[in-house]
Image: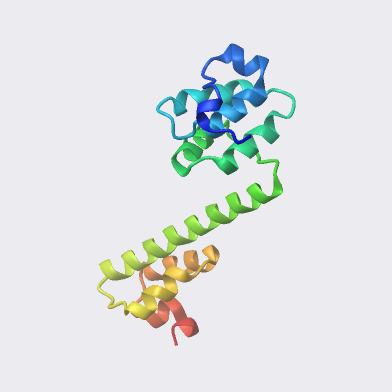
Length: 158
């Protein structure tokens, strides 16, 4: 037998979620794109997290939700929540680091362009592909008052 979202009830009330957290988990997974998804996920985050195995359930749901629903659920989680599943934790932190590096690279290129430097497509691509946020931060600091691209990038730009 194959289950479809139509076979799984929408759990959008706290009583049902507390009484049957596993059903709330299935509901969140099956109805992640449902018009009531924010209510479903809010009930899940507020009532299932504290249940036995609640952290594991949240990890499972987070890994299976569509992107928009996943972001909504993550925004509901309390500060300092740590994913329990090593695979999810790895991908979460990798994504976070990639996003930080992308923002640093974008800022660096913007400062350089605003200061009047000609940035070749090749250099822009190299900077945008760089993932070392500490190095990007050093270059951004240098870009503020450098007189040349060599002063910003040194040997890396050769």
